[in-house]
Amino acid sequence: MDNPLMLMIPGPTPVPEQVLLASAQPPISHRSLEFQTLMAQVTADLKWLHQTQNDVLILASSGTGAMEAGILNFLSPGDRVLVGCNGKFGERWANLCDKFGLITERITAPWGCPLDPQAFRRHLEADQAKQIKAMIVTHSETSTGVLNDLAAIAQAVTVHAQALVIVDAVTSLGVCPVPVDTWGLDVVVSASQKGYRMPPGLGFVAVSPKAWQAYTTAQFPRFYFDLGEYQKAAATHTTPFTPPINLFFALQASLGMMRSQGLAALFSHQQRLMQATRAAMRALDLPLFVPTDTLASPAVTAIAPEHVDPEQLRSQLQKQYGVVIA
Image (cartoon, rainbow, N blue to C red; front, side, top):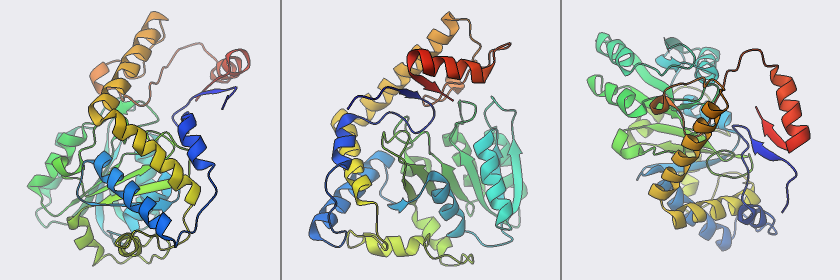
């Protein structure tokens, strides 16, 4: 399937032909044995990708929908939360929390710089009354190309014990390791249109036993995004509502490709692409927004050239070369 344009934007990303062809199959009944078999396979593969024994639930939504589900199901109005803000999507989490009446404390860092794990630790240590209910972190900050040290930030919660670790892994799942169980992550949200190499339309939420315990006391009203209903349906390999069946076909194909490649090869390939891209930018004397390679996301590379009209550059790249950048 020829595409006249090469998408080099944060998402949606290019979709392999095998995945596109899978999505073009005729739909099947979502209440059939065939769908149950499909659901069982993609659920097992999602757990493999997340490196977890926790539930991984599939929503018909964007990543932002999965983010909202991550708030509604585990928190209550007036809860105190820490939100890491060093880019647009960290700010989106903070705004989401504000909208739902949470007490939002922003842990900030300049755009282009990583969040400081010790800042989270200091806030948690000072919370002797255990009022902080969650800390919310964007792993790969799409807007700047920073990869936050999620392992170290998650480790900070050990001084508190009660706070949930809620993670935006929309641009990191499938691109770099997110070992959910090893790092002790409670709620991890992602979406289909980036590292999964699929069209947009599916959101994913991994949920730990600790998060399910919080679910039992969470007070926000919810219906479509009630993850308890998804968990009950998943027990019989089905969904609570009509799913986008053709995207499930695409998911099956994409995860199958990843499994055949293996996690180590998958992540090392992405690392090489990042290194090649950053080397090319340096060779062209284009300043990297995140100059230090070890702080850079393997999913997104941002440049910040002076005296360049971004709209003119984007237009010229697309018209002359068929390359689309953000």
